Image (cartoon, rainbow, N blue to C red; front, side, top):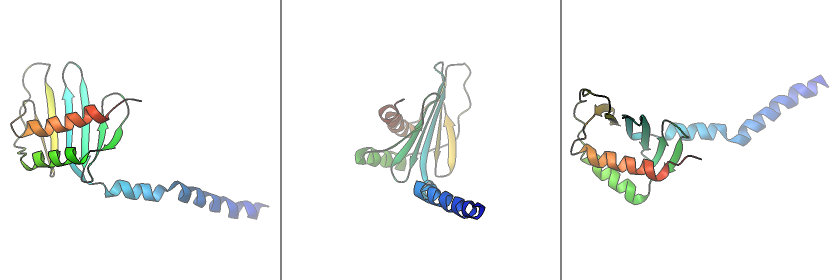
Length: 141
């Protein structure tokens, strides 16, 4: 009876893991490549929003409270974002202004991370696109 348990238990565990598709899920996560990330933090409202866009046109959205949501952009949204990213000039991070009620925007793009408190001409369309996606697709359960 003990031999039966020793043989059957590993076989059942192996079948369970294979049935869940864990290796396939892990492979899918590794294949995602980050295109751009926006972090919006601060203000009296205490924003802590994050929008990550991957090269497959899907986004991961999160806020200070609530769930993390995974969605995919429409073709029009994807084309618009890519066009705005082509014109994006990250520049240098801005110094934190004096005062308490400022929003800090941090963009990560092509391996560079830059923070701004006042959006520049090339930042505004990208930030607007990513904020629209956050408002449209993120919804608490």
